[in-house]
Length: 477
Image (cartoon, rainbow, N blue to C red):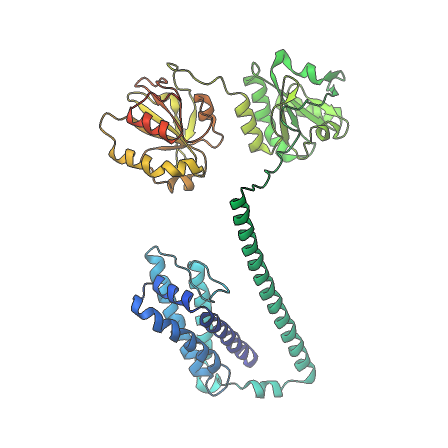
C-alpha cells in the first residue's frame, strides 16, 4: 500500500505541476478560458494569476511527508471546483476549451473531462482517507528500505519514463511546427494562385479506349468486349473474385440490374477460377453474361485493383472511373440507368428519398400545391453564400409562395445544421438532380399543383431566388 500511495502522490503532483507551469506560460489563454467558463471579466486577470500558483503549491505540498495530507486536501478542493464548472457548462449546452494544460493540450470539455477529474479526485480522496499520519509516508524512508536491485529497477523505469515523455513532447511540438508550416505554405500558394493537382481518378482515363479482350463464357464459348454490348447499350464490367463475401452479397442486386435495366445497360460479371463453382453461383443468383478471366489480366488492364469493382464502357470507350465497393457500384449503376432529364409539363418521377428521420417520401406524391424543389449540398460554398437569403425567404414568403422542398446530399446531421424549416430529403447520389436536369448546386425547379415540371432549372443563387420570388420562370439566361 505504501508504494501505491507514494505513486498516487507523485502522479497528482506531476499533473498539477504541469498544469500550473503551462498556465503560467500562457496567461492570455488562461484568462480567456476563465471567462469562457462563465466567470466575470473583472475576475479573469486575478484568477489567471492566482490559479497556476495554487496548482503549483498543491503539487509541491504533495511531495514532502509533512505536507502531503494538506496538499491532497488542496488538490481535492481544486478538482471539485473544476468538476462543478465543467458540469454546469455541459448542462447549459456549452463546451468551452478546458485549457487544462495551457498550449500543451487544450480541447473542448465533455463528459470525458468530468471522468478525468473524477479519477484525480479519487486519488486525492485515497490519500486523505489514510489520515494525516498514514498519508505522510516519506519518499526517503521508502527508498531507503528498498534493496539495491529494486532501486536499480526503479531508477531504470524512471529513466525510460522520462525519455518516453520527452519523446512524446518533442513529437507533439514537431507536429505543431509542421502544421504551422503547412498553413503558411497553403496561404502562400493561395496568394500566388497555385492549386494542388487533384488526385487522379481510379482506373483508366475517362473517354480513353476500353481495352479489348476475349474471355470464356461458362459454356466454353469465347466472347469479346464488342459482343457483350447488347444492342449498343452501355456496358458495366463488374470484377468479382471467388471467396469474396462482398461480391457474393452484391449478386442478387446484379441479377436484378440485368433484368430491370436490360434495355439501357448490359451487366457482365467478370470472375475467375473454375467453371463449375462459377456456374453454380450463376445458377444460384440467376446471373447472365458471366465470363471468366484466367487470372486478373482483364482487371489489371482496366486498373481495377479491388473487388468488387466496376467500370462503365460506352461506345467502346471508358465512361467512368473505377467504382470500388458495393456502394460505389450501386451509385454508378444508378447514374448510368437514369432516363433523360425531365421536360416542362412532364410529371415528377416516382423516386423515393428518405427525409432526415429516415421516412421515405415519393416525389410523385408532390401534388395539390406548387412546390419549389431546391437542390442543395451543405458542403457547397455557393450554397453557403445564399443560405441566409434562402432561410429569410422561407420565413417571410407571401401566402401565394410555393412550398419549399430541399433535396440535399450529405448526412442528416449536416443538413439539420443548415437550419431549414422546410422538409429536407437526402439524395446522396444526386439522382433527383440528374432526373430534373440539375448539373450542380444550388439549383431549383418548380412543380405545379399536379406535380408536373413547371419551369426550367434555375442554376445559381440569383436564378434560384428569382424562381422562389416568382420574378422569372427559372430559365437560365
